[in-house]
Image (cartoon, rainbow, N blue to C red; front, side, top):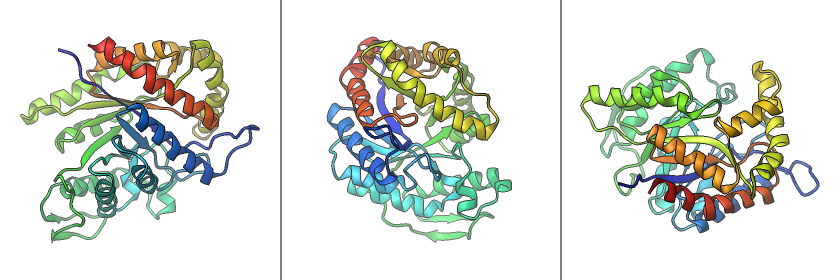
Length: 343
C-alpha cells in the first residue's frame, strides 16, 4: 500500500534581503510571507506554517493574524503555526484565536504547540524562566481540555481556575487539529501520547534517523495506553534550487550568518563549510536539486514512518525572489517526485 504523506512548508518569517542586499523592513517581510503562502496554495502544497518569535531577526510575532490574511487569499491549503509558544501565552486566547482562524478559513486551521527554541517571550510577557516546565505542562493540560467540544472545568497554579466554562467561538467541525512540537525532550513525546495528540518532530541538526528512539517511545506510550497511535510529522530546514551546487552555494552564506548569530548566543562555535555540507548530504538540511531533496524526504518518511513533512524554507536573509523560486520547485517538482518514490 502506498504511504500517505502530507507535504508542507514552514517559515519563521526570517528578515530577508532586498534587491541590493539590504535587510527588508519587518512589514515588507510579513507581506512577502503572505505572497509565499498564496504561491504554495496554488502549487498544491498541503500545509503552510508560520513561526512565532519575539526578536529582531524574525518578523512574525502574531502568526494567527498573518495566517488570517493568508486565509483570505487562499482556497485549500491548511494553515497553522510552527510553533505557538504556549508557555508564555494564554491558552483560552490561543484557542479563541485559532477557532476564529478556523472559521474564516473554512476549517483549515491547525496549531502546533511547543515551548519554542528561544526564551524572549518569557520576560516580554512577565513569566519567570524558573517556571519553564510548569508553565508548559499546566497550560497544555488546559488547552487539551479546551479542544474538546464540552464545557471546561480546570484548576492549576499558573492561572485562575475554570468551572463549567464554555469558550467561544466553538470549532465548527468539533475538533481543532492540535500537534505537540518536540525538539529533543522524551517527556514531551510521552506527554503528547498522554493527551492523544499527534507529534511534530523539529529536526534541526544531525541525521534524521537519530529521532528513531522518539518515534519508538511514542508508539510504546500509545501501546501502554491501549489507544491507536496518532500521526507523526517532521519539520526541518530546506532549500531547493535547480542543482545541488546552486542550492548549497545560494543557501550557505545566509545559513551560516543565521546559524552563527544564534550560535554566539548559545556558545556554539562558528559553522564551517564542511559541517554545512555534511548536514546537506547526510543530516537534517534538505538542500539541493528537486531530485536530491525528494530523495531525502522519502528516505526520512520511510525510516521514521511519518505522516507529514514540513520544509522550513527560509534560513537567514535570502531574497524573497529566491524563496519564491524554492517554493515553486518544491511544489511543482519535489512533491510529485516524493509521491512517486513512496508509491
